[in-house]
Length: 143
Image (cartoon, rainbow, N blue to C red; front, side):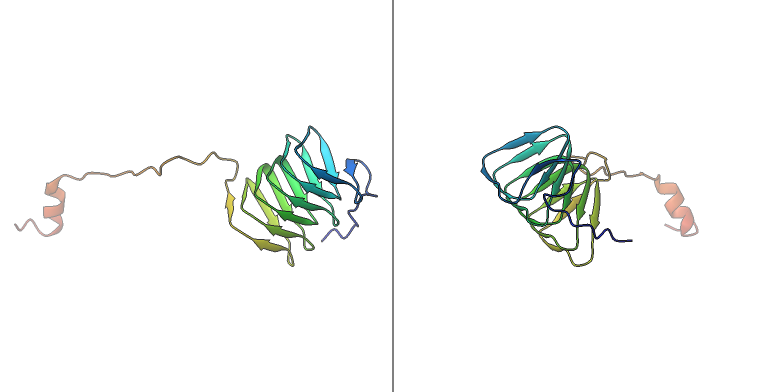
């Protein structure tokens, strides 16, 4: 069932940057943060980030998990889980271990879902060399 709670600055239980806050610069935090205002710059965290319905982010985001209800224009890199809610607009590239996109979410960009496994730098190619004799046997031993 879809969660239709109103995620704005009035939501409690997290540190909050309310809708009347505008920041230009970098943000770093460790636990949970709800941004319902405007941010222009980089956001880095080992915690959980929620972009509220009034949130408008322009910049790179690197965090453990993210839930987006508002607007994000920039790339997102998430170590665990990314949720793009039905009312969100996201323009940028996304890299995450787990991705949830609700119907109605606007996503313009590309995504890479890693399932928690580090991506190999080169694909591994495995070849099995067979001796010539079995191939001849497949054709009745004719040369």
